[in-house]
Length: 450
Image (cartoon, one colour):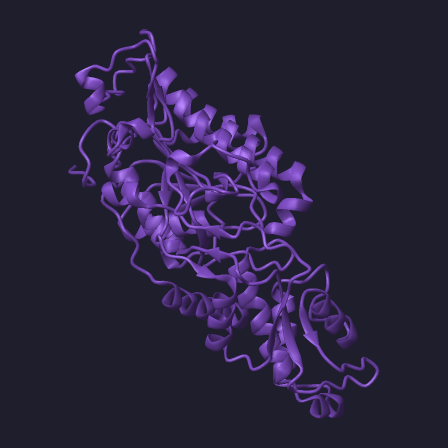
């Protein structure tokens, strides 16, 4: 039987029937990677879930989803021993926005360390051929140079609000590098910028800025269009039904569509979907008085990448690049390869031609410090939060006001990746922000109507 191969050559080539484990297949990142793999003809994919099975299209009939708690070392060990994956995408993580990161600091550092420790170590113990660890650009210092190159890692203080999460992700990078150098494994780390797309988290307490803005403005649009006289007279209104259906799909702190009108309005108000001149006793709202509260000044600038573009970059790198390629791809090796002061620089070191395939560092003195081998995945293009909010407002056709609450923190003022290493490795993004937001809102509406 002839087996088709991807573009790479060698013993660690991903075949279309290779056993591939995508950890975290229900989330934004994992589901996008699975979709990409299926579209390219990969047929032997296994993923995990805890409470929510992956939500994919009909292609998912070829997907093997196992209920597995990645925080449980014994369960993860049993899974690797029984499933024997050859390739691993470590896309599972505890993630959230600025409020969640700052509130649940212990949960973020503990759970992320536990997940990645379990998976990376079991990958080594069971002989996984190649692993990709996915982190985040929050690993970089608060005052990192812009755009942020990979070599600015650990050069200054982290942003306080997401420091525990960032430290966990930095530990994951170092764990992959260390296993590669000590054990000769082939683990690569990628740091995607802010992602958005299908299966994103729209929980207003825990979501990131872009999905939160989409949901809040969507609910604001429905609220400003409610015909309150009709609702009072008949108990029904199509726009009020839109709000109730949205809350049924994803309650806000336990408030769903079955709650009273006053309870719903009060909860929306608490999460920045505000109505002026509201009288709960009569449910009288000026139709032009709905406003959306957004934390901060709106001046911070952020970069956003369509999740399916991110997935394509990840699969491309797994198919075509190894750890040694990442090391050797540096144009200026002094940025990642620091030589001991007493060690002369050889011609081989100057050329940065490092052969890691034979685990040469295990039994020989290490004269080279291999650092910052992770790869940024981004667009290299940013936008202010205010510009983003108005873009979404126009796309959704919300007529109300956007209110930027400057009493709330802004966070880091600018976060833009330098994707030049990724470009040098042969990949660039294709979906621009406006197109991506249109696609994401269409997906969101489809989910709410289903």
